[in-house]
Image (cartoon, rainbow, N blue to C red; front, side, top):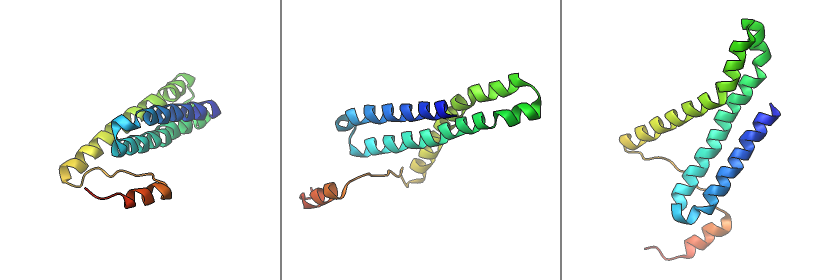
Length: 122
């Protein structure tokens, strides 16, 4: 389970670095939205993959067939990622169609918030 967890962590760090490099082009809100989405993807998809790997001995014991258990473990990360993508799209479309909009987690330091409050509003 440790190699899978490290793979998820490396993927998250790579995504965060790529998003940070493009922060100016994306804009602040889209950057924060994509960053929160990547963190959620790492937690949900990575967690599901680690869970399936941890349950491998139980699956082999229950089914008695290592081929079925190996299939579940090998496809768990991919399938959980697909389920995450589909559910994220459905939730965003539902929020947009209901008129509430998509909530975005904003990560800002106290210094940045003070600097922005001093700027004149346009």
